[in-house]
Image (cartoon, rainbow, N blue to C red):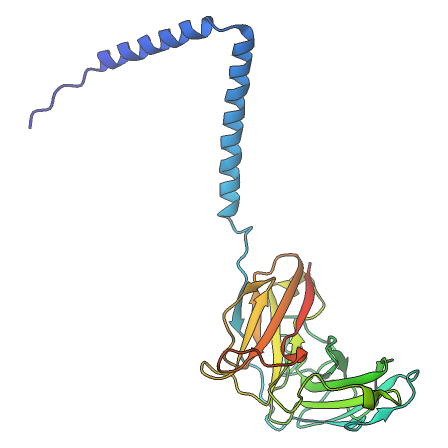
Length: 298
């Protein structure tokens, strides 16, 4: 096919004509109008540069995506067992001014020794070794390293109180075994038993929040352990599930009872919320089945 020759001289002539017209137009403008036009052009150029910079920032790694992933490889302690020796079920502790002492007995595993030859799994870790997570009511857990000895949980107000407890590995993951969890209700104050009703069914499906907890710094911020204990229920796609929110963002439902790692958390405060739901998707009654805790990543 024969192509028509391109006329470069014609294009040059058009460009020269346009430039001349533009120059003549600019020379006729007043000095104020020229100044205004210059400021406008500077603003446009600056805005374009700023937009480009912001667009680049959004597309870079400074925006982190929060995700959860299964944590595996923990040793099994199928015979681990925890028994709450005292206080007894329904016991009334008469003196509100006395600190409450809890005695627990753990068998099938050891306390105050490192798990698996001092393995840290690369996450937050207790150098004191394995321990018991002791949860009073809905407060964050306290760590007990002394098996069978009185553990001081402090002063408690008058009324009904609950202890939930289970042993954990050195890296604060709960040891999941058929008898490793125990729960107990008791009363503080002589009249508390008559005036207080239980708000949570400890014999029904029960969710106990464990991790994350507190503050994470340095290398501990890369992977944050998410862990909880499920009692009297089985998780599964067509069974009970645990719903998870991180900073009000809904994450995929948890259908397998195991530890998880949270990745991608930015520095600052974060809220972790869990909820136990039944096979029909209904929330299981009780405040313990809908826990929430705030952590700090720095």
